[in-house]
View 1 (spheres, rainbow, N blue to C red):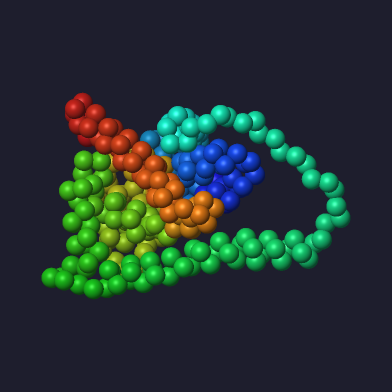
View 2: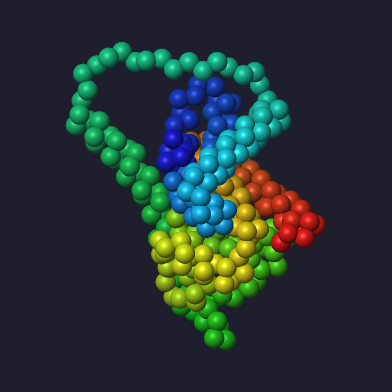
Length: 276
């Protein structure tokens, strides 16, 4: 379920009877690339790694997703041996007795209890975040917007991980939704006052390479897209499902630390080999 939405994946963990294993599944849920991250992964793989072979991009995407599964299992094993020790339980899913479906009740409950509730959570963070992005892009100091100044401030922090300040800031401001990460990057690279959508990979590749991107930058962004903090809706859902701010913070730290560590190791290895 997390392939569609990590928040839905967290909610789906309710079917796991063991509280310990349910918590492990919730904490590792965001290691699965959701629908908001998949377009970023596909675009980077297509532009920087697939070349002209039409079969390379799907194969590479499959390898990337398999890698995310491997890391998920690795982190799950780590949690089961440290913070959440206990005996593993068998998974039994019982089929409920058949009853005549009540269409009206199902539609209303699905719409109000799930769809609208999740959308309201998204709006709670998306509206303030949209206002913040607008202010940062429209307030200027010494002929530079606050957005550009923040990107420059984050530059030294991003370089050891193979990225730049614009990339790191785009991920930070993209907390409400992963779909806006690339438009935010383009907004800062092109110095516009609004987010830029671009479906043409050739034009996108030209812009990114003109601002210092190469295959090593793309690899770092690929890894960080795969492993970083959950979106705002997922964080609110984790808080609701666990009832604990501590577990929510851990659910944010686990993928973030994993992503930063992998990016750092990759960038340092490429620097040692002279491949950056």
